[in-house]
Image 1 (spheres, rainbow, N blue to C red):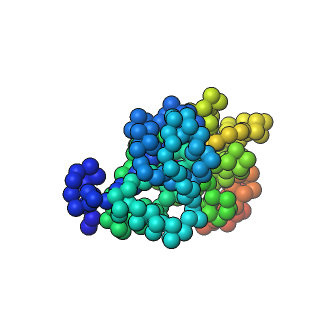
Image 2: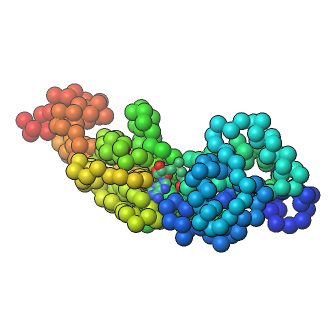
Image 3: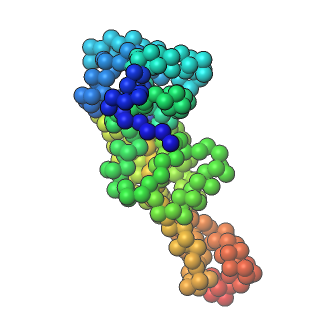
Length: 290
Ligand code: SAM
């Protein structure tokens, strides 16, 4: 066990601290007073992209020494930072936007600093996923953040089936160029009526939420190419209900798969036959009332 008392004098007090400092996801007013103060007070700032962070520092009139820190930063560099912290210097870590470590670099640094018994202090602040969640209209009671929407089809299927089996809102980051394919995958695995929200350009002047069923959003995307940064939120659960088909006639079951998963009759009949371990012909006859 490791006990960290971030702000009290104890055995760790002679060390500096590593501060994880969130930065705005589009609107400079979203810096907290504390984050601005610490950007100016730390001895060294580690930034994902110094050219990006310098604009933030200039805006607030801060000229703290800065070095670049990204996912390819090596252990040797991290050891140098540990040494500085052990000498009592304080270090701030920032990414280009939002919370460091949330789909941004920093985890190896944090673990190494903790291993060295040096305090790591996290500041609250801007984060795209949580900002989108609470205004999405989907349940914020239970949710899972998955990072970027997977590109691999098998991985998409695995994750979407997992989402369908859990009553938790799912949060993804996605690029505007792949959002249409992501919604198509949602329809394929969770049905066209699945509630989905696209939260775009949060905190910026073109901020926009598209809330609706997956098919409605797909229809919109067929005609509108989205731009900017996107959080995709998907309603969780529901697949178990779909799997509980004992109360349905074969005809109702086929119709349910057609409406919920967008299947053509032939495919739906095939699936129902498989799910209920009966001959396709039997389901076909029932569906066509022969
Ligand atoms: N660390 C960041 C955070 O705490 O939200 C996330 C960094 S991740 C590399 C960048 C992705 O976050 C973008 O591709 C986009 O999906 C999402 N994102 C960042 N800013 C956003 C914004 N203003 N509106 C919507 N999504 C945003």
